[in-house]
Every structure is written in C-alpha cells, then in structure tokens.
Image 1: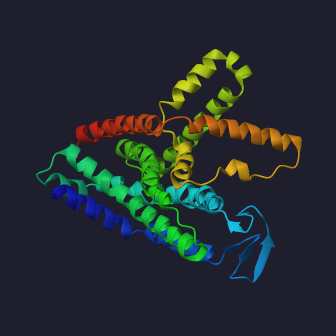
Image 2: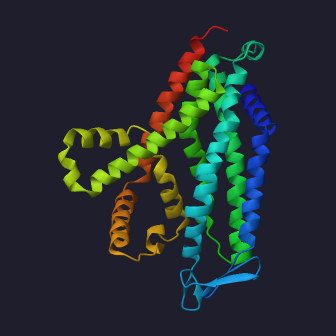
Image 3: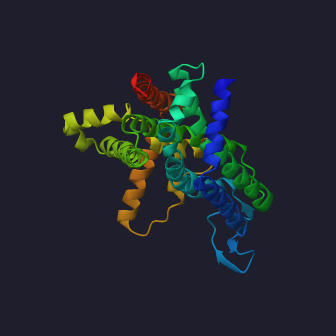
Length: 309
C-alpha cells in the first residue's frame, strides 16, 4: 500500500508540472493535424481537401496500402513526437522528482515511514515511469483512433508501441536517477542523460557501419570494442524498428526516393543495416538493455541507501 501511494504521489507531482500539459497538448495537436489529412487512391489531401498532391506511394492500384500509411505514422510521427521530442520533455519533466525528494524536509518525512530505502527508491522510480506511460498511452491511443476512424487503417500491433516507449524512457531515466542521486542537481541529470542518449545511439551507428563495411573490420581493436559496447549499453536505436515490426508496416527504406547513384548506394547500405538489425531477436536487444538498466539502478539505489540525510 505504501509503495502504491508513493507511485501515485509521484504521478500527481508530475501532473502539477507544466511539462505534463505540454506533452498532453502535443498529443492533441498531432492527432488533430493527422485528422486534417486524407488518403485516397493516387493522392493525399490536406486540410480536409483544401489542398492535395498526387502520389502513388500510399496506394496499390485503386486500393490504399495500410502498411505504407502505418510506416509514416510509426517512423515519422511516433518516432519524432514520442521517441525523440516526447522523451526529451519527459526527461526534463521528471529529472527534478528525485532531487526534490532528496531535499531536506522532504526526505526526512519519507524516511520516517516504515519503509526501507531500497523500497522507497524503486517506488519513486516506478512513479516516474507512470509519467511517460500515461502520455505514451494517450498519444498512441489518439493516433490509433485517427488512423482507424479517419483513414480506415486499423493496425492493432501499433498499440504495442506503448510499452516500447516506456522501455526507451526507462533506459535513459536510470541514468538521470543515478546522476540525480549523486549530484542532487536536476540540470546536471538532464544534461548527462541527453549526452548518454547520444552516445548510445552513436555506438550503434558506428557498429552498423563496421558490420556493413568488412574492410573497416581490419581495425580489429576498434571493431571489437564498438561491437562489445553495443551489447553493453541500451539499444535505443532499435525501438522504432521494433515498433514498425510489431505494427506490421512497410520498411521506411523502401519508401525513400533515389535520383542518383550515390542515393542508391546509401539506400542499399541502409537496407543492409536494417536487414541485419531485423534478424536480431527482440529478447537479445531488450534483455541486454534491461541488464544495463538494472545495473545502473542498483548502483543508484546503493548510493541512495548509503547517503546521510
């Protein structure tokens, strides 16, 4: 009961922050913008038909291709709004939740309750996950309904994007929590978490380049270190690929236009990289990422348990 109370209190605290309403407004605006768009055989209309363009990307003959429309939603709208902008906003909104708990006056009240420090720590951490869980559910739910009711495209697998966005956030939130416990600075937690996110993605990109270019692998030490690091840090770059696979949409690479030989070469490389990533079982990418997250959380919990208040 005490654990549940702390989780609820953490969510209520996040709800009182302006960022909560910013994210809610973003979800509503994106859903309304999507509703203004219409898909018909051979063309796409905007602002309920006020403007339109001719394109065959989303149609096959005289039929709408749901998989192509789903690709736009998952790889561009969802990935941008929840996989990037939404995560940044969530990190900013929840970074202060641990530092505020550690302030004199607040922490003494919490520690006075008959609850162990590890239990208090994890209850607070789960409370921060409810923030992104709520907004992920709202965003995916609204965009799912727009796709179905406005475009006639129902993709039940798209709803599985909700736990994926919570996973992505948790991979980064553990860094924020550790930094917050060590430094008690919200700004430092935000900055170092964003730096870590860039580093995680960069390691995956470099490893993909090594894998796709065998000639690079002659630098065996660098290749070995990069490939090992890929399976140590969270696989943040695979979230959108997994979301698309579960939703059953087309590959975004297949929809990219090519006009020059250089474009075609880049497209072929992207196809090979995506094919290689798709062959990796989801249990490996999620399992290694959660192992990293648990290690960081245990380190943060140990530091929290040993601090004097």
